[in-house]
Amino acid sequence: MTIRRIVPNIQVEREERMRTSRDFYGLLGFEEVMDMGWVTTLASPSNPTAQISLFTEERTAPLVPDLSVEVEDVDAVYAELSASGAEIVRELRNEEWGVRRFFVRDPNGRVVNVLTHLT
Image 1: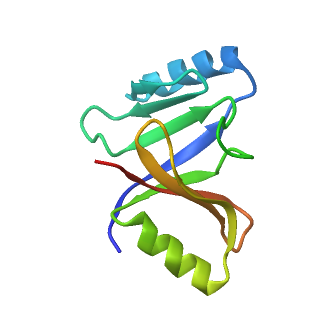
Image 2 (image 1 turned 135 degrees about the vertical axis):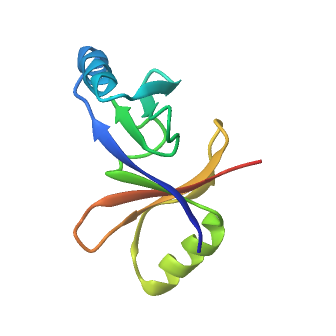
């Protein structure tokens, strides 16, 4: 299995906190690379896979995941985790913004968004 990046996801309470958080992480050198209104992703200009995502909500799933793991083959990872008995929180599906993903709960109760970008 190839991991392409890992992104911590931070849930913010309201839009004002989104701006405040974006400004704070900007002071650490992050720049905005995606803004969908309800989710904003910030990345390091010198290392674009070093990212943080800020969520006011999760529009296509029941909850905001704790972190996102981008993998090369999300279908294979889904099959492996399903076969292991891991709790699938949200089934595998394609999203309109060009990713295929599912949510799984880790042994500590954290929800992980596992995804791949569609080409």
